[in-house]
Length: 114
Image (cartoon, rainbow, N blue to C red; front, side, top):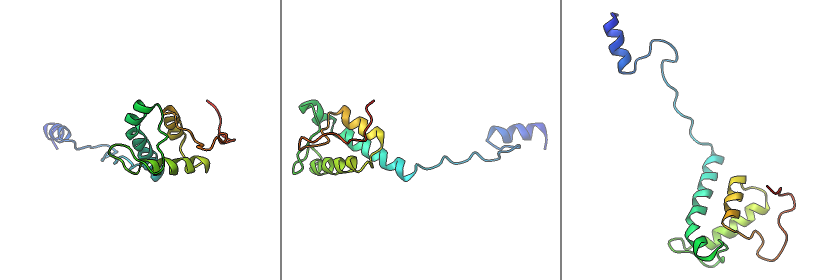
């Protein structure tokens, strides 16, 4: 190949030295997708938080645009008590002033304070 041909090929992305192809980015793991989904759902509760100062939606109620928010919060609390929530989700929920126990109980005993 001539120098001109090589330059033209390189200008359109042809590589003559490894790696010949740029690898595809790895898709997010199941855990990363789950964490992202939980954080996204928490962000949907921000208008409720701004209005009420907390996200303690009653289980049988919802919020504007999300009728099942109360049930979701109840499920989130159950995951918290079973230690299956990512720390970023716990922090975000606590930033939105969630009460992990609706019955006046103490916080989870093995939770470390920041």
